[in-house]
Amino acid sequence: MVHLSIKKTIAIIGAGPCGLSQLLAFKQAEQDQLVELVCFERQAEWGGLWQYTALTGTDSCGEPIHSSMYRQLWSNGPKEVLEYVDYTFEQHFGVSIPSYPPRAVLYDYITGRAKAGDIRKFIQFRTAVRSVDFDDNTKKFHVTIEDLTNQLTKYLTFDHVIVASGHYTIPNMPDFEGISKFPGRLLHSHDYRGADEFVNKNLLIIGSSYSAEDIAMQCYKFGARSITISYRSCPMSFRWPDRIKEVPLLQKIEGRTAYFKDGTNVDNLDCIIVCTGYRHNHSYMAENLRFRTVGNLYVPPSLYKGIFWYAEPQLAYLGMQNQLYTLNMFDIQAALVRDVFLGYVTLPDDKSQKQRQKNISEWQAREQTLSLDDHEAFSDLQTDYIRDIVSCCDQNTVPKFDLERSNAGMYRFFQDKRDNILTYRDQPFHSIFFPDKEAPISETPWIKNTDDSIEGFLQSIKTV
Image (cartoon, rainbow, N blue to C red; front, side, top):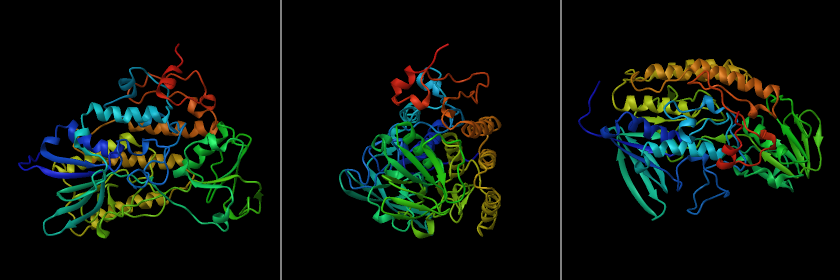
């Protein structure tokens, strides 16, 4: 194992779940003493996407609102498949909780672990990264930051940069004939803040992935009059309740009428919610360092092991995948970054970059064979990806959990939704770490539960 005599300087961009995982990866292995860590966070608080704000557009500093969170959002996957290895939900809350918690519970859990890890001291809040470049001669990164509170610009130098700013902030907004003249409410899911404004309204939702599904179900739950979901490639094909239907892709809007690819139409629309995903946007990175892609993906191009910039492995990107696994996958990615940047694990010497590109291409070739509606196959892909990352890490410190049981949990989750889209959040899962322990259930079924507070959620737990 290599021992460093000079501290390495490392900049982490973003204090959301990925950035917090990276800080903890150094801290937990007592390796923060070998580096000078600094994390730049544009928002006033940590937690990234999991922070809720009623604001849309820009914040008080004129910066784009980062979070796409909304009121009454509940986890759309069982907590058991995302739980941190070293910090369980039961450890945090002092009691076993149901498998599908609301946003406030998840935010408290994520930030509670960060507090326990004593990593806030490494974070500079209200600090925006304006540019990142790399000097081939000195092998150093030049980073320009802006202190948004004091409106001061600083120029800093680092040995390594880790981009952990997420990719669910910049809306991907498609154009359809006539949509810009729609006289009702038109918004992207990024600016959706709750279903209460759509009670008794006729909605068109454009999209066929998790946001479209969840916003449709929430608006149904709170009393939308009708919900039409327009898909591009393939329908979600759940057993939708009355008032929800799926139709092929929107072709045009005339007044309050929408016309679809199959020749059908829907009249009297009050609102269009566009749930077509997000654009990866890292405009502050120099052109030769900038990760860019179109649409969602499971295997990011240009990133070796889905993490390291193919042409310069001193740069890492975390959480760039379209995610089935989340918090625990971020921990494992962060562990490999830590091990590589500190010299505990050596990446292949690949000056020509051919080996790294070959590895990326092999994973992408597998992804391209999968059908868009084969969720189990994508779960297998990401499970194998995590297994590969684990195998690359220092085995003494890498977080380990039962990937087979986790993947089986994903399979069951998919089937629960196919069985009943209204009740899948009421199902209890067994712990990945303690297979004999099953989560409790809530006294109130999800479809009737309108209290998404931590207190309300904990009080709703059914005791035997």
